[in-house]
Amino acid sequence: MIPLPKDSRWHAVTVLGLGHLRPAPGTWGSLPPVALAGLLVIGGLGPSAHPIVYHAVLLGICLAASASCVAFGEWAESWYGKKDPGWVVADETAGQAVALLALPSAASGGFVPLVITLGVAFLSFRLMDIIKPQPADWLQKFPGGWGVLLDDLAAGVYALLATQLIAHMIF
Image (tube, rainbow, N blue to C red; front, side):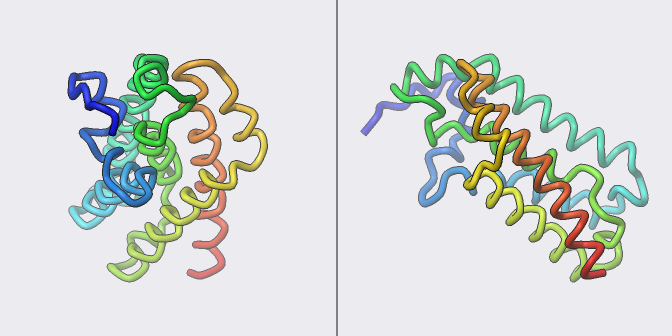
């Protein structure tokens, strides 16, 4: 078992320890933006009602998680002794936030459309993060925190496009 440093770097890259939950730590790291997006919509601050607030919150999450990866990614790779260690999930948090930007307006059409749309965004991101279609796979080869982060941002863009397409087909 790898000892856990539990300092601010560890908290940042593991998203307060979510990266150490099992199984599938990347899935755990993807959940906070989905939950927050759902709460924003339910609270009347969704992309249709308050687009500036909704997008500012998700962009803020993306930027904070991205900054954690870039700032502490090299440290995390050194600490865990491997490239893009699975415990580092700030990259999943950032990528999932990208996938939730421009959430289709159907998501604001009631609880069921919201759950379906958020589910599609979540599953699309997880799929794209796992299969890493080009250039996501190539982007992972960048050094340090950039390599940890960039493939997930690309997966987030792919998931955003898939969510838009599927939501428009369903609703």
